[in-house]
Image (cartoon, rainbow, N blue to C red):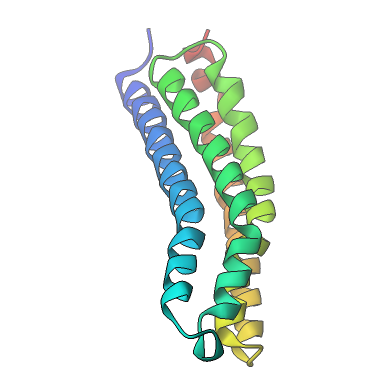
Length: 162
């Protein structure tokens, strides 16, 4: 029998994982659709006066990678989150792996995500600040994973999935 307080935390973990998966799927859709919308916008503008060219090109360059990575990771998180809520035997290990994978996913998504912002900045001094913010987000992701795994690796949590 699982302690009711632990059971609530596991439920919350499962459904928040599902919610994060949905957020990733929505981001994948945005990354897939934005280049199309920007192309339609560019078609309406005179080519000589197109202020969106740099951002459109940088967004389009990484949108495919970002959409695929976010879409696949989001789908995996939805499945894992449901399994955690149901306390499937494999769910504990799968969520542990996805926590570590989230760091890699963030690193893969860094360039396609930040490139449009660098294009908007036009190489100004704000570029250093954006790079620092990106690095800070990566450090925060590592800290969040480590903090969560302190809870997730407790013996009573592992036992709930047996």
